[in-house]
Image (cartoon, rainbow, N blue to C red):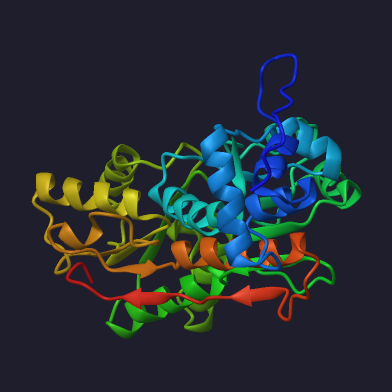
Length: 341
């Protein structure tokens, strides 16, 4: 390795050039090696990493962004962190991006289009290398920001056939139809749809339930229970208490999310309502604990970790200007039938 003297900045910070001198390579090779680019020889990459570790080199994200027009981070916009669905997705995204040299900068939109727009404006100021955004429904200003930024973008949890749009997800409507069909095939006829939050994906599930119920001549607007409050066990329990008293009697309830359904099962235990004998209960997303409820919860298992991994890999290809053979990837779903139905 080179014995050239270190040339620290006035701040005393070790520079990329210092690492290059010690490793006996050019600064651009150091940059590529530390980003994990596959074109760099593995032995050379190891040499660069040893030099960086020996010197205690810490990359300057701001300088990297200025030099390359884009930073070493990926901006990820999700609706909330209180839902385990998005936690699972984020963990999968990070597991895929970190080995490639990218960090995640997370923004929480709270299902608010205006908040999403503001977050995106702020994050684009930091010159992200890529964007991961949840869903396809957003205001026109946010769409324009994404389009004009020139930053590669992949949409999560839904799929799109629109040209130039990259997405990884599932059909929320088809999944809801499949679960409703299961309830109908088990002999249920008055199947309520109970929803909270009322975000775009919830409304897609509502549409799937409506379509399947109408196909069997069972749809009745009085079976729709829509609450704009945030989804939670408490709200699920309250909705169950309201729905179970409806006349004519309800014989099944399709909750739009598992936390609502879990709250309903707890309320049924408290009220002495037998599940599934008196009423079947089903949820959506197969969240943690659903298989441990009494009785275990019937639900739709969504592949959120797989979605996170596939979306991160797609984004990596876009950031590397590599071709993406399938811009829209539908990873499907699974109806998991348990004791509650």
